[in-house]
Length: 345
Image (cartoon, rainbow, N blue to C red; front, side):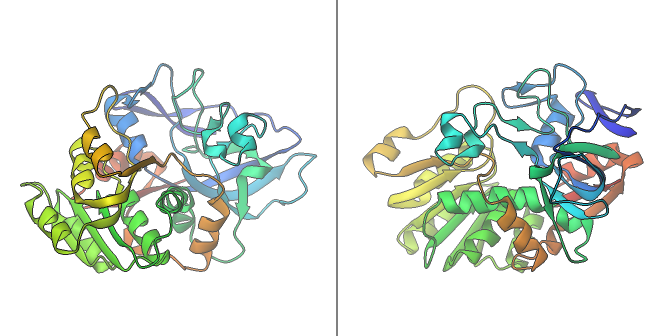
């Protein structure tokens, strides 16, 4: 089979690789579509995501969907020909975090397309991949594969919304209008948020957010004065989701949230130490929470996509073939033109 293989920063090659043998509990999936995530962009352009550095050739991609072509002898729930969204995470189920119902914090997790461990864990940007039956969620309708590939990022957004607590009637701010920020905004609205504001440093994604229902948007490239004035006008935001991965945005969220409010860090900040207004967290009793990947919400995300309870079609702005994968990564980096770029296989 052919696969996209990232050797180092900006060195993506289409290579022939052997198909993995099929274990009893596994299925082989013909990948049909895969979305480029922010972490994929970091691997492609910088050779690392925060503290996770590429040390050997890596097949990227953890947002993907396809169809089952072969099943192991122990598989009972799936059959060849079924269309599936694939959960890229496979947790151990036995460590303390798994046992307390937090599989995203599993101490032994296998997460596809990640250099967080060595040897690296290869992802789904290939013609075929082999995964456990438990990772597959069947889609019964005719949902396009390009939309099915949103199951993983939508799971991230749903998990972040859960970390924000009860959003019914709340005033919510999202910092960062990239794909995750936009999906968090949609998840918050689905959760009952009464007022949604979003920030970015580029006008095009802010316009897209307004088109999808944002009540307010702020271009903070020249400063946060307008945002903070809006925060004062409404008495502070109840919940802030930081989805940009920039420390100034996290600090802006700490300034914009009301006393006793909640700030959820969703974006991955650069590796190393980060300056944070910790005294403000203390003096205003702000709850600062992390949201890492996702917990038990992948099936919920698939249901939201299948029933179009959350419509991701406005986010899909570019589609490329496997043979033009390098161009796809370049296009995905251009936030003036694209929100989510998908590679078809």
